[in-house]
Amino acid sequence: MASTDTAVGTEQSTLQQLAKRHLWMHFTRLSAYDQAEVPIIVRGEGCYVYDEHGNRYLDGLSALFCVNIGHGRADLVQAGANQAKELGFFTNWSYAHPPAIELAARIASLAPGDLNRVFFTSGGSEAVESALKLARQYHKLTGKPNKTKVIAREIAYHGTSLGALSATGITALREPFEPLTPGDAHVPNTNTYRLPPGVTEDQLAETIAARIEFEGPDTVAAVILEPVQNAGGCFTPPEGYFPRVREICDENDVLLISDEVICAWGRLGEWFGCQRYDYQPDLITTAKGLTSAYAPMGAVIASDRVVEPFLSGANSFTHGFTFGGHPVSSAIAMANLDAFEREGVLEHVRAHEAEFAATLNSLRDLPIVGDVRGAGYFHALELVKDKATKETFSDEESETLLRGFLSAELYRRGLICRADDRGDPVIQLSPPLIAGPEEFAEIESILRGVLTEAGEQMQVHAAGADLGRVRRAP
Image (cartoon, rainbow, N blue to C red; front, side, top):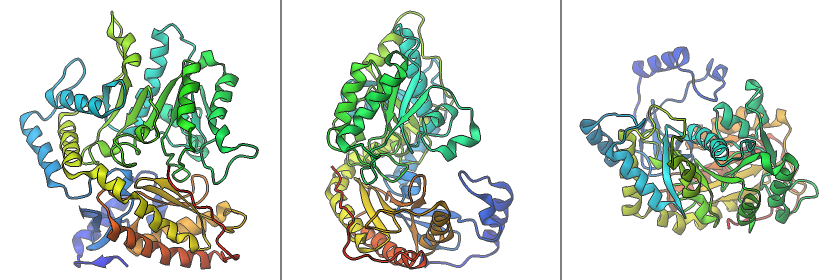
């Protein structure tokens, strides 16, 4: 149960009324709150947040994979306030200001290889949209105007703007807004728990090569991939996957975009996920943990090769956002990176990720837990009807399991995480990067109780020994 610190009354009931009447929550079934309360979070501290009633919750999702440094950091807030006193805002459209300049230089110093140029946005979808547009214009400027298509992976989520949504491989998110921007194709993801028929792990990268060949190499601008794929439940790449993808892109003059809106800034124990998996992208898209979500900010980090055609004559990247590189956001990002280095946050993740994974893997003894996968502080548990056969739940059963029970019950018992069925049903965990053994144990305890009850309600029974295959993060 969530612990209660204080009781509250009239003000909170007013907030409930106002929320239900006026606030349009994102990706939310508004009808779900006809009879139920809207969860209203009023403050946070470290790995925990508190609702309007004073109940405490372990934030096992870092809000939305983004409060990496933890809640309640007055130093980050003060950095923003100090900057606002000096210069609250000025545009990056043909102008510059010190916070954006200094942050761009710092990001370039942390990024791998020749990723030296930073284009700021307001968030992740804008970063992906910018990268896709940049890939198209780059090829036009280098004499290959037909290279416009983008290859992504099935079930992958790359954002909500129309271009980013076209790269997104989740049918239910695409259908309401079709027709989308043309030219996107999808290949199998790296869910090695459920490989496509006839495809082995070492053939997954080759599906990208085959798709480029099918589309025509002269028509493909970019391949966009997350280091660890979020949607579907934290799919890690098999050994050698990304180095081979890099070779395929080079062979076909295709840009490789590493979508690190989630995977950058320590989530996988490195500044960037591509560093963990030893590949060099042409572009990195990022957001979320750059400021630990204390202010909105995203970025595209481009290689010298991609920038080169824009450095001469009348050429320019004809694209921008009003608030890209906002001075207050830039100052907060700098303070966030200062804290990361001063407090050894990346080292903390590396030191504790094996224990986090082991804690979650201990749940494999539950009949409903079929697979546990992920890397760093980014993991998922896949839920199954039959562990021996990997039989999954029907759409109706998933609705009952996830929305009818798990989401509300996990929250009621004091854990915020994601119960998701974009793909097969999963529970995702992505705690603040300051979490440690105590938080891991609390996560395990709550999950064990709730998932045990879920298995009983869904009539999932043990079938002999645990046949689930343990996957360790590479």
